[in-house]
Figure 1 (cartoon, rainbow, N blue to C red):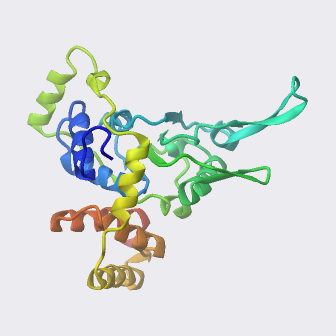
Figure 2 (cartoon, rainbow, N blue to C red):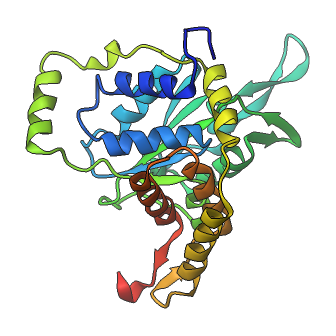
Figure 3 (cartoon, rainbow, N blue to C red):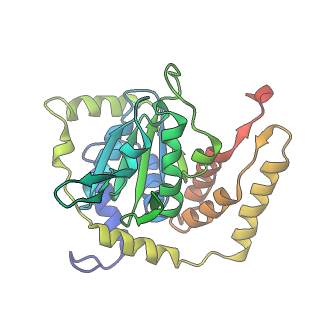
Length: 287
């Protein structure tokens, strides 16, 4: 990771944060958590009302990495093959050829993911968990790094299909942008007065450098005390009478992975609540 003069992954993350800051006004906690999700090799679900900058944040992050980026607008008529790809018959070669789908990328933006049918949503399960796609009995490995940034509107439910628990469990975090403050609102109007500053965002990291940073971050030691703390919280959520579905084993494991990349105590508290919020489901009587 010395090609561009970087000596540590933290320098790369600082450059990415600076580029995102050209487009996103404020929301530093959300941006930092999203970057921690990137380093942990997880996926993020951006859930908020329209107009809060979910898609813009995902596109800004994708532009900072000089890898491949694909965006899919999820609709009810979207088919699983539209995501994974198909084998088609090439008449010139008299043979079947594989045409890769948009999941063969480094950063995949699944816009309004809950507008696709459960059948199409399930086509992402293998991709997100195992970083591979199996089509007609043939397994294809995905590019590394592989990051899914999905957005959904939690308010409008017409024509939508709620994500099943198995799909939610694939996400490391569920993040919310929220409305801007007064000062941030004024800054947004000034910044977007002429045209979107998204074109000013330039790549500051290659896909290989991000993958190297993920491998380096995975070697960070986590103490037994912290591991026990994570397990105790997960077990407590499963026994709580007001929780219908507690934190899963996979969610606890991903929390451990993400905690390596959020060294501050504040970040640790936010990260666990953010991760457990993906898996936790309260009883209907308590909602």
